[in-house]
Image 1 (cartoon, one colour):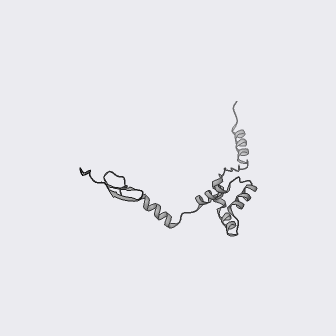
Image 2 (cartoon, one colour; image 1 turned 120 degrees about the vertical axis):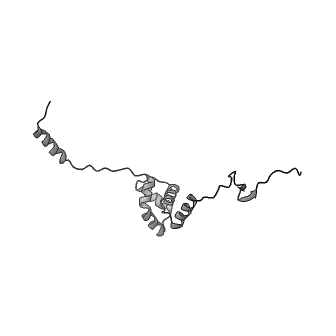
Image 3 (cartoon, helix red, strand yellow; image 1 turned 90 degrees about the vertical axis):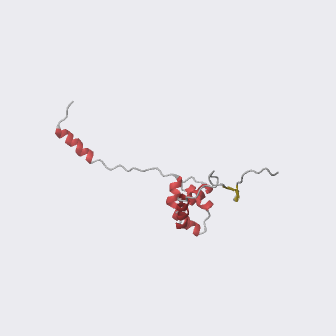
Length: 122
């Protein structure tokens, strides 16, 4: 079957008039807590416990336990400047690891000792 150019133009016009589709992506519990972090912190300042906040969230359809809420809130904290500096310093630390065979100094339970050659003395 073949179509006329006018017929295709009519179809194109109808397609252009279709409404936009609303795409709603799914949000994980962790993302939801991150989004709600400021409101949760305000509730805590007003005296609410994490347990009562978790109960309220469950009552509103967000199925979350108190320990999970606490964990997600800690993950949602923005790192402070000192934390960023510490992490940056660790990433760029050029010192040799304590158990490096070239480095004779060994760190065991935060105690340093130097490895020496065996002696015959007993």
